[in-house]
Image (cartoon, rainbow, N blue to C red; front, side, top):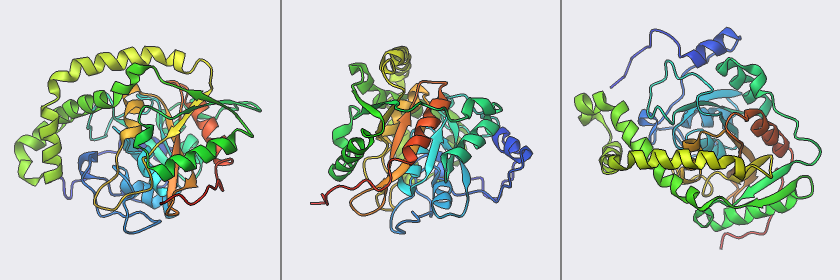
Amino acid sequence: IYAGRRPAADAVAVARLRAAGAVVLGKTVTTEFALFQPGPTRNPHDLSRTPGGSSSGSAAAVGAGTLPLAIGTQTAGSVVRPASFCGVVGAKPTFGSVPLDGVKLCSPSLDTVGLLGSDVDGVAIGLGIMAGDPDRFVPADLGRRPRIGFLRTPWWHDVERSARHRIDAAIERLAADVEVVEVTLPSAFAGLVDAQQVVMGAEVLDALADEIDQHSGQLSARLRAYLDDARALVDDYDAAIALRESCRRDLDDVFAQVDVLLAPSVLGEAPDAATTGDPLLCRAWTLLGTPTVSVPGLTGADGLPLGVQVIARPGDDARALGAARLLTGLLPNVTTRDDRA
């Protein structure tokens, strides 16, 4: 539909990076309208597998060492998930931090411009530039023994067995350097995944109205099926927004005893290239607008990257980045028994 199109101007995020001296090498591959139809990009750690999506090319380029930084956007899990699969840092800032001007919208109340990079400090600098507020993204010093809330999440049993074992081993290792506190979410949070899907689907239908009306034959079968499913959920939109607002009010209680939360970010290692993976573990945090940072360092049963995500209160990006920087030095080389069986 947009083959050969060249925008008249850069998006604000890109323009700010250029003005700060960044060199833009090109545009990386994304999935169809930042949704779920895979592109040609493969995972640099195993070419039979997906790099994740929608920021597929960005994650693969950083994971392959081609770029130190690459822009991504997240509506469900499109920064955190590919970062986890490709073994790089991926940061989704607090919703609204980075202007969406010049971005092709998918879901205006969810879409967030983020960055994927080879290290936390570079990502933090880039986010500060894109947001026009560098001080807000300086990684915070959490002190000698920060309190990390380990969150198995309501979806823990959806995580692959081998990944659960490796994350548990990592938590045992971290307990020597940080204070680990097990955190349980209020029961209402279990509904956030479904609520995110409702909000996203309804807003995608609106954002892509012209493409659906004028170019439906050029949309992939996967996208058309997604749109059909979204239409069936539109009537639940107001209830989904109400749940989001209620759970946002509960976040102060969730973070009352911890500096940040640490949770799995993906269900396991990257699946095959026919899919971009499941954003299940990212959806709730995207809906709530919290800053989340995917931290590399673990590997799965097949030796592929397995990320975990740091989550902080909305607006507390510095704390999320500070915890991520700390964890990048603690997570590598965590080992556990071979549990592929």
